[in-house]
Length: 187
Image (cartoon, rainbow, N blue to C red; front, side, top):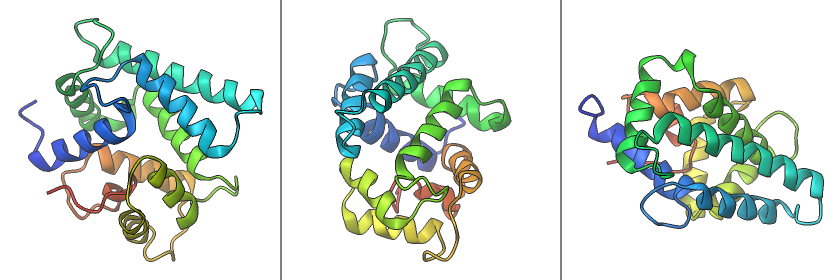
């Protein structure tokens, strides 16, 4: 883990704690994904839409299976902070060889945020998802304005995919991808 700077470690741990370890146990396990499924479906009002609930469940459980397979080196059913950082460090060495679950999760997040389904993320959509995960509105708004150039740049799936790689792999504190999870500083 020595190749990860403190800056990148701070980014990775932010996503670990805010978006993955949703039950705050200190590790990521299947229960976190069960809670996240419920949270996201409730946020979108899908509790009565069995098809969308099942699609979300299927996608996120595939993400869990892939994450566990790729990061849970001691096979204890939990991904520790060290395992998490080591996995993303490997990703940063060759982002084009992303594990399937990483691509599934990236696409899931884009689709979740793009509530309107118009192929682009707008500020209201972004802020809603961030706030559901505890990010203050002012911070999510500031983050959106950074990676969208003040709202002037369309944040398409392709642009989001570029930002995704920047978030997980870049050591550059000014990379626009640093802001796609709603935080503006990782000091």
